[in-house]
Length: 605
Image (cartoon, rainbow, N blue to C red; front, side, top):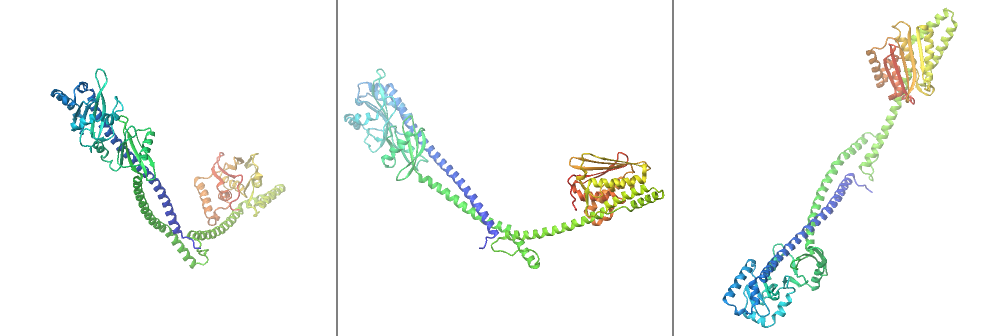
């Protein structure tokens, strides 16, 4: 099975990540937009319902204030209390009533209205919308009060609002009006003497209901008894009853809820007036809100589709640009493999993509490189071993000449004991120097070899040299590994250089101690010392040798400049742990301080 190419993988990865991100963003912003749209829609409709209710309430309260002015006016109360009928008013009484009604009714007559006062005895007077005298008389004769007036008057102390009804004071029965009633009482006996009725065409209410913003909703008004004051559609009575019941369960004056039925799901918005007892209801089909949501969904979908198409193109171009260097590398590898057959280039497998091919090729090249580095390190190590042995095998011929001269002198003096001792010490030294199969020895062996050398020097110079060796009792010299000939050449350097230009007595002090996890050896003398130039040359020669041993092997012989030889071998042995310092001695000459870790192992062994 052919594996998907890397470019396709990157493209699919980019596209998958983007689609996932877009979908999550779409869900988040869609939910946010739907929530914001729903909240804005419901708040907007609630505001319209509240404003409509407040305008309706203001109109009804204005009419009620007119009715209250009527019932509290003494002229009207006197008219209803006197035994005079409607058609027996004098001109003065008629004029007095006209002025009273003008004063009361006109300020509140922004809509056309009729203000009427009457009682069951047939007294009647009105102002405003024209009435019909014959209809008025006919009403009083026909028992009109019991059928049309008294059912609307629930209380004599509060506002009484009728349902919409035909104008029963005129011949225009097609006109629908709404009436507000107030009872008129006698000023002295406080007995009910009649009624004040303020009538306004119901179309004034419908104008408010159909104001700006409310035209798109089905509107209803219910009175405090739950009876419909106004409805636009002939809905099933159970539907309206369900609305009234749910409104009665609400604890707030303005709110919304949802009603589900077989026909449709409806959103009910209402606002209730506590002063007049009316409830204004707006009904909207839930599909209206869903339609707006679908419009947003379509917009989001188109935007998502456009963004997906854009980023798919951008992802493909990015994948192409990313993989181009890789494809060029593969082409280069294949071209190189065709020219140099010995390179470890694997066969191209159709089941693997470009990264697998590059990875396997790199792994093989890395393995070959590791082999090459390993072989090079082996060669380098062998080379360093050879240089280490070469440095270690050097011996100063002047030392041999001097010892032979001492032996010759002792022989002439027939000092056989001294000759035997010199030969024994010299034999031990040669045996120690000429062992090549072990480049490292214990610190104890190196100190012992140094003592053999010092013994010879004591025989040669006698009391001219003062030698002191101080070895710390806490240091285990037999367990510490050091390079062979690391201390004795430094001691020999004192006799070869430091003491040549000064007169005896000569002082030589050797101290060996342990500090923390390191061993230390100090060789101090009272010789001529080392100037700054020579000090610099020593350390420069050590660093140059460590960079290229083969080039500088001749500069680090033990004889003459044994300091360089010792410093080089100590650095080669202990690496970063090596301690090699040259400073002025407290005796006035030179002090050499060497040391290393207790667990050093030769880096070139």
